[in-house]
Image: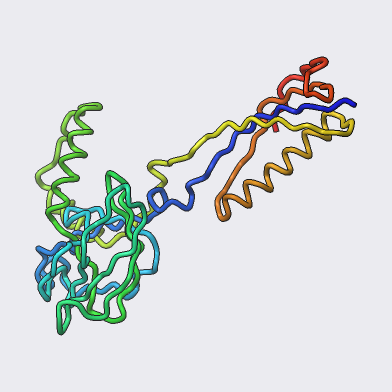
Length: 265
């Protein structure tokens, strides 16, 4: 009896489209800073009740992180500031659930549970709208200096550029425009991905005489089924990169080889 050996190389790509580190919305809103008292930075009381539940990255001169300590009332351009009751996760902790407090009658009323992830260079938050106005998430201005210094250092090490010339007469116009755009929310493309590539080597023995194309189809279909069972909810792409078939005797020894060449699907 002869058996057919099928050597199948598959390239498995695990998509990170669901990774919040590569799928978030940037909030560039300096008025969230704890240094902003009452309406001094915004001209009006701010509120996050219209903020949809989604992943966000805080990135402005007002700070890049939610403060980890109690924020006094009437800060962050709102009456009831929202702060993180605890510490931010480390990179190794992955995605964690933390408590957000609203400082109203007491320092922590109507707490919200949100998800947070440390993406090494920045933090992303799965924010939820507060139950009422005027309440808004705050940012720690001290964290803005840390990140701006790091980005400045990285930029200088890559390619220095000459300073653009500025017309003194238009300086006020630009500052006014930047202040008006402070509330803009801009979606960002995936800055980084953790896509993993794995090469799988399979050796399949068939007791019946099977032609090469049928054997390849059976194995690829079974492999796709296995990846769906073991990685539910993840996007997996399988690409057949090389196939080699040969006949073997009952002891598993090859009798002859044939090289059909690579088949790319």
